[in-house]
Image (cartoon, helix red, strand yellow):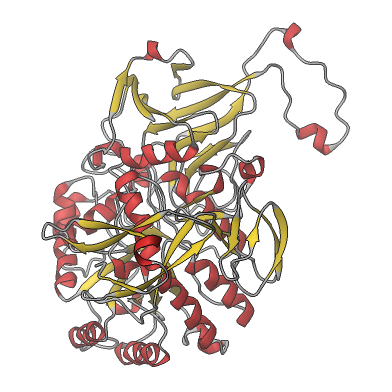
Length: 633
């Protein structure tokens, strides 16, 4: 695995790398002459980079893509946009990072709306053209037409007159992805409680309703570590005041937060960064904001330390009251739902323009909130991210609610150093709710977002028992998942990823509905209203997670459970479920063996005084099938 940096032309002064943590990988500087298959030229609108590739190259990545997977032959514009309806490259988290199945990937360090053409042919001599008949059907009209065995990856960067390119090589796609994440400073390491159940309350709730819901959650015994409050906690929310509504909904907010903390909930607050005139930071922030308003609020220029400091000062007041996380909403904008956002022509005091700030706002907002938290652990949510964001402990979500889109986003997220939650909101019936919760259990964050629901959805559909069992399953997997995040943190290996990352079986090239959850579990969700699905397993032995039955190849699978298969030779640590996680939590862990193995499993034990985690190797020979207590906070 190698990471090469090539500078073409004159890069812009503000790029994602400007704000990125220190890389955890070696970067090898090379010249353009060292890369003969890559060409650079300036154009009337910016610059163009072309890369020679074999004709059969497949392309993956480009951020949180919900509408496409293998992007061979497609045109993708890397632009932040919420709720896109087509596979055009726009997304909540567009990333100019393309991975191929030919042993290399390319990251373009630009915040512009970079466009990728995934396999184009240059003009060739007439004699080289292959003979083609007359196209008489739609499939013939739009099928790929080939004139030679060589194609190009074409990258257009508007406005800019140059850019730094990072050419990353690796034997497997997983090696390339891991190197990119190390380039970004390594993956985030969430607090253990961040991996438990997360429930967002109805936005209309007052403090009595919030406390009542929290009490019922504990009475049901449903595992829940985080409780989120939606816009109603503030005096103004579109734009935001960042002030508690002390007149109506939360007159005793300090006591409410204290009560929730006493009941072992971490409290998370919804907000967005557009600052209302009634906010106490409005006047101080005004000189460090763009020249256009959004929802009557300022758009802070978070590229400036002064803006981050002023904004953080108000957030610190909330954090000092006990708030441990935030939901950073509406930092993506949308051309598809009303065209809301600041214009690309917006001028900011730092000198950055609206186009680049559009693509950088999400990650800069996260950076600002981490500065406010000042080292306090968090696992929060955000509506937009961009390149080199792997180290940020923020998980993406979406207002779209299509199950296929959610599954595709889950599979794609691991390519680009981002985390994604296929959150649960409403459901038509009990069966749909359970199917959606199954996918949440096997995802980066176990989130239920009931911001518009007066009841917990499992109360509405009378399935408290089933939902409790699913979230207990999530709790039992936390030691396993926590160790997967540790690999993400140290080695750049994403905890949730597409099969093509690990396996080269032919079907994995286009498999967008199965994924790896950690190193050993393959997940293949059944989407409501289906009751069964076709499952394809990579070469080798696999075992049904529930029954232990050996499986291989392709087969139909019908079950009320979510299909999960365990790789041969796995020693899986399963914890006795708990309703929540505290600082002194001790998990009782049982090892479950799948196949004949002498393998060990690396679990994480107590933090040392300097805050580092201590890996602990557990083996079948030393612990067998008996329960073991591990203090892993």
